[in-house]
Amino acid sequence: MRKFNIAIAAAVVSLSIGTAARADVIDVTVAGPSQDITAGMNFNSQPASTSSNAAPSFTIGDWTFTNGTEPVEVNIGSSGNGAQPYQTTGNYLSVLGSGSEDVSFSARTSFSFFWGSIDDYNTITLSDGTSFTGTQIAADFPSGQSNGCQTLTNCNRYVTFTDTTGTLTGFSLSSAQNSFEITNISAVPEPATWAMMILGFLGIGFLGYRKSSKFSGASFRIA
Image (cartoon, rainbow, N blue to C red; front, side, top):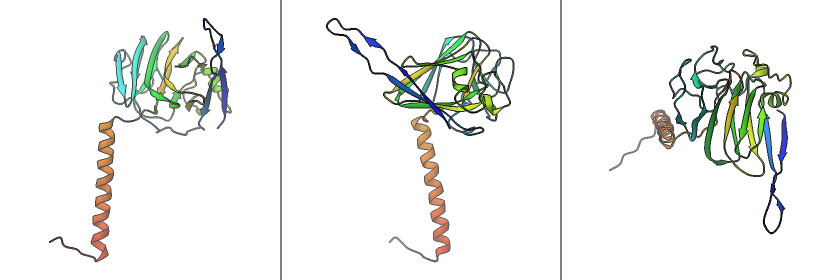
């Protein structure tokens, strides 16, 4: 993996004294080819359509998605309105030409998603104001391309954005043409989902214990 830093400094003007605000340093890390193609959460909880816009607002895990400017769709497969991020499965988000989508979450230092068919006209703007184009992201890994290739790892990678000096509360996606596709977001499951997972793990552990006890020859009785 390779990563690069972009520092953005802003001047804060005070009536009494001028001071310089801290510079946010954003690390962008791009995973290797075919890595993290099943990581995180996809958009299967939302209905897929290649002709209708996504719900104006919806939540996946602890991420809230809000349509900034339509068209924005939740798609499945490939069509003129989006391409399935290479080697991933399930529904994905597609921000079409002139569209934008706003994403918010609780403050954190980093977030990730799988960026499909990276295009030079794709833009992501973080909550701290830092922006990256598909061209900048593709330039950060070997053989990276931002020409929208749909069946090559050169244009389809799992990307992580980290604020090394502060926190992030979301980002916005926009695209001048079709499309900006993402999936496998690093959202944290909702509490109910965590509860079901924990119960599942407990159940598996109990069955393992029962099986172990059965063949151990030991027995016990509660009077």
